[in-house]
Length: 179
Image (cartoon, rainbow, N blue to C red):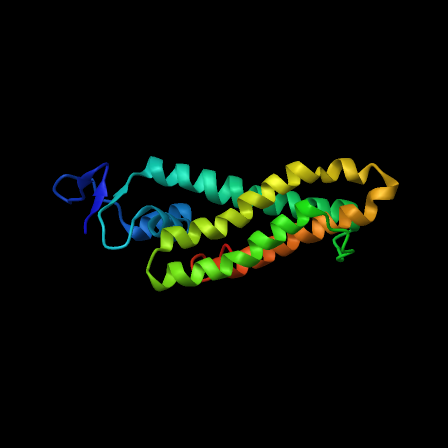
């Protein structure tokens, strides 16, 4: 397989080559690792451009993962001074998130054993995507305004923190620094 640059073979003579060391210095090792693992299928040609790399970093690492972690940690600190316990005030919505998080490990085994790393990363990021949606659905900021909903709010924040913890552990072989 070839690593293509804008759908053309990389070549020093064409001047369209990028050096891994330079990319890692500019974007970080985990960002480059993520792009290569997610965008270049095993044993197939892969396309690289700096624009595609930046788009992937912004959409997945910054928006989906970074935004989720930042929002969740901020709410945990704001509403509970950083100490969140599981009050078990779960509803169906919570159970859906918990089920998804628990099922990802089973899917990862199959994907990793068959070298479908793109699918494995997508399954992990499904946790983070679903967690972001869970925030929108549960509206912790609205729960925080109601004195009678504090245990429910704490359960929501706990579920988010637990989803992030599990997702980060699953992500660690792929992105050790980020996780």
